[in-house]
Image (cartoon, rainbow, N blue to C red; front, side):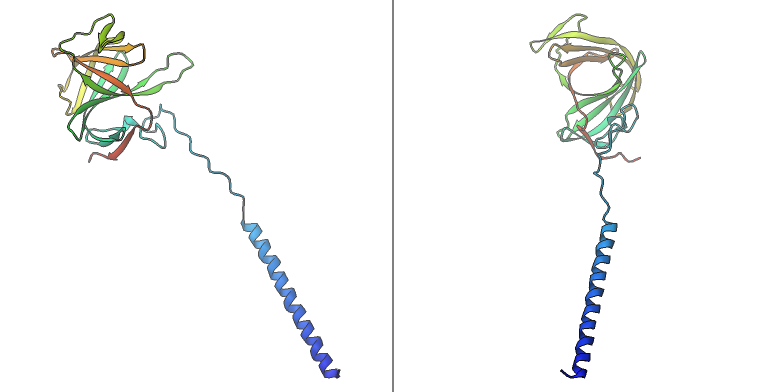
Length: 222
């Protein structure tokens, strides 16, 4: 082999080695850079619901019924209804709101929202939401003892006379006094009698609603 050929061969080998070294160095750098940017991702923790004692924040994933307003269109157990009016009721330091609802078939129901104190010192306050459905009373007057309704025995729970203030369309005066008598059956069913003083008694069964049963479809225009 001539001297010229050996020189050319040596230069070719050197060039290949240089290119291979540069490629390996680039590959190591890319791996290093990729490792530096891939940080471990912490698992996403679901946000905790706010305490019910804070108005407007019963939970991050369901509507607080205390924020309902007259004129709102809402969803109750999957059915759209309109909030026609509200009764703001006060009795012996307790306060609650009774919302008058109308569904697409123009049926009327009432929704009661009240913050209840715990039964004992270790039990925190809780939000009670009840959906009321009228039942025919046929002139019945709530007894101070137990009574029978639809073959079910109900026992006295609470009764009294509360002051109320009307907002929107409630079918009741702007202000007045409201007599009520609440009963509970042994199976937990609730029955309530109400009357504006000077008017006849009406009665309704109550259905407790769990959180998430109410949603906002559209807010009333301010």
